[in-house]
Image 1 (tube, helix red, strand yellow):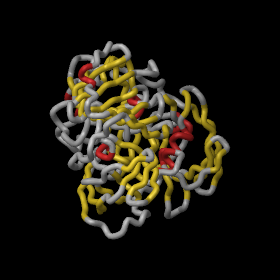
Image 2 (cartoon, one colour; image 1 turned 90 degrees about the vertical axis):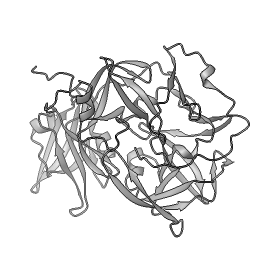
Image 3 (tube, rainbow, N blue to C red; image 1 turned 180 degrees about the vertical axis):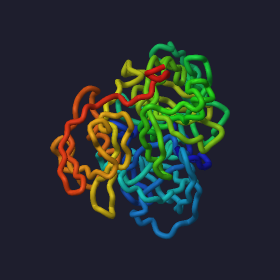
Image 4 (cartoon, one colour; image 1 turned 45 degrees about the horizontal axis):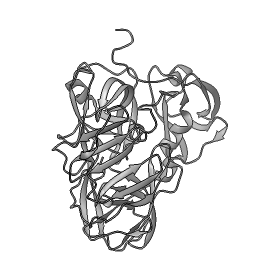
Length: 392
């Protein structure tokens, strides 16, 4: 999640207006025109600004620069003033909006559709905005719509209050099975179910200090790769919604911000039609799917990324105790093929989507090691760290 402070601008519309979006298996994709350029963007409520767009798009000379934070680091990027902005066939007020320019390599491969960058919450926060996953549209309600008047049944519909922290993000309360509190931002840009940090789990008593995860992996954020692991969360209440069981991504570093504990991501949010009223500090959730979490996905237990120096896809992470480790995969092996599909230059999320699948199925991989061709079929397992270690 990026954290940067921007002023909210633009006049409220007088009637509800709709703008379509597309949904992939891990993100919302929107199409708009910014400073005369047609762009496709992943919609990210975890970014408080307006736009982060590829530095391959020529917007002219930068008008400034900004420092951005994500889960683990801080970095600087050039900015451009937004002079025109069209979305959903409607001209939007560009006052106070900025474009941040950064490399966006791999986004298109990650989402399986052309992506030029990110649209942040500021770009649509001028009204009471509804993210309607069911119909795949944004609905911009007039300011007169007050969701505080609605009566949630706390079975399908829920009304959550935004916390008085994180003025540049949508921070809401999550409760653990023991009633401990976590502050997690509503973040459509987080492709996981939810993400927090090891020290947060230790603070709320869900992870014993000094305990080592049984299964480790890596997550890739804007500032670079970071050690992480998956954790089974039991009997949580996410924004008031009871969730018996879910799988969270845990970053093995402290949070980059002291006022929140992480984010709730696309894996949870896609089950809801969501209305966000920033001014009145309320969020309405309508669970139209009847689901609140997905079944575990299985994986062989290794990560391969493109090595530009050797122009090949190489294994860079091998999870100890995983099926891949037991099958004899080694760090440094070249991944040639997955289920008969020849590998080429791909972003790591695209490779992972090819390797992952239902638990207890197998994935066929072709590897090269020191010029030797190796073929193997590797079982997929749920490499999730449970509340208690398997051996007590």
